[in-house]
Image (cartoon, rainbow, N blue to C red; front, side, top):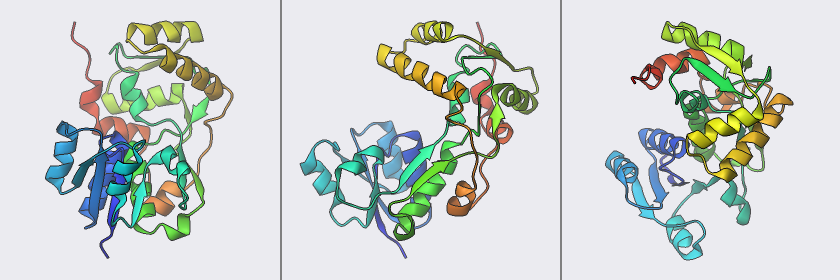
Length: 241
């Protein structure tokens, strides 16, 4: 049965994919967006009801939720007296694209020999869509989400090499060098501080672990690193001078 669903943050990568999945499954989706940019117009073209608003503006939020059966807005949901399902994904596989900015064939990261199971944003979107379609069984639950396989970055580089047909090398670096790389890329100070703290947590094993929640709730096996890189091969093309 078609439901009336609200997706907050619908122009983001996870929110956008969630919106697409719900539309494909025949639901009526209202997408709360900050402005009518190309991403919002694309969602409208797919059939979403795009509404401009701000989650910090209670009036616009109230208008956006009129007639809605279920909605998702990540941490902002904690502010409202409704049942909430918390999703806690580990590092996204898209992080590999972000760290490919220099195009050198090296992953220069401060993660030592820490491990995690990278998760594709599309897999998290499948879980979100399933929760919104049938929220009752998931109310009050906290779901840590993991990808297909727990790996360290040496193993990640190996799988990337196989997918791309060329050498990819993991080069463990210290936190100060990582901070310098981020500054050269124009990252603001608050983001650098956050990522350095994340790196320390990563080294300490905070992001390690696996489970079957993506398959059990989302309905399909999660993408592995090698498959993800193959699907996004253009994003890993060598940089030209």
